[in-house]
Image (tube, rainbow, N blue to C red):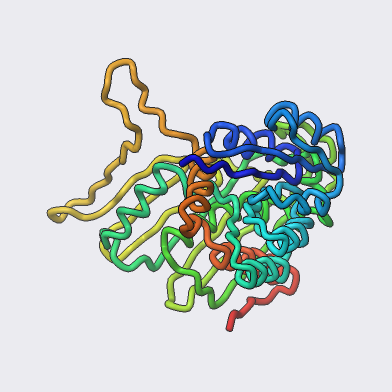
Length: 361
């Protein structure tokens, strides 16, 4: 297509520099023409590295939204700011990619959904683990009914010692939580997506903060890890309205010898099962009365001197997002799907605080 999408970046911190801006820069139909950050030097640096020669720099996102030439906005701020900026951007006539989690609270996430539906603008959330080659293969495989009814699942995002200690990660007011809202959100999103089940009935959860020295062995050092009030680990039981159950495990810091990367899950169906852990996809079933396991190679290898490396999920996410705007199709991550993720995560925190299950209508 000859059409060029002009994009504004709101929030020029780590996730913008590490994921969104490099991916958008690689797409021919895209120009990043405006950058906003409350720290002007960050916006200036981003504009110089990723923007057009005449890219504008702002410290007030509302000024950026006044530019009618901008069709798309990426909201890459701390969680607390996601909802207000996204809602304002949608009503300003922009399509919005908001980084995960959708919002700090479920109520804020609901406002975002309502704004998208009221304005008719596209809204998506940055759950790039759906876009992995292994996840897409798993989705297609499941849609053939190869697993049958999926009634039991585990989702994981377990670090041994990996508490982020930069930016506002340890700020409860800005972020809303620890590993539940930071990394378990990816695994839960992927699990619900693969199950195609977005109707929770009951959530029972418990957070933990027990380690005597949580900073010991932390891959990013201390720098506040010892003092943060946020949870180090959590687990939850989720029952869906159709009776399916999901067990969730997550941690930033835990005395476990078996860390499991975010975006990992196990699905058990009436015909077969599937494991997607640490990006290794394994299918298990019974064939000719024997238990079998199949390791699925999702690379494109088999040719000499070619390693079969697939596009990164963050680049795939960006390409799919831009294409859905250019072609006027639905984004891969729908707003109401992301809302359910936020509702379940919030229910885990509420259950832990009250000691009681949370029931959904």
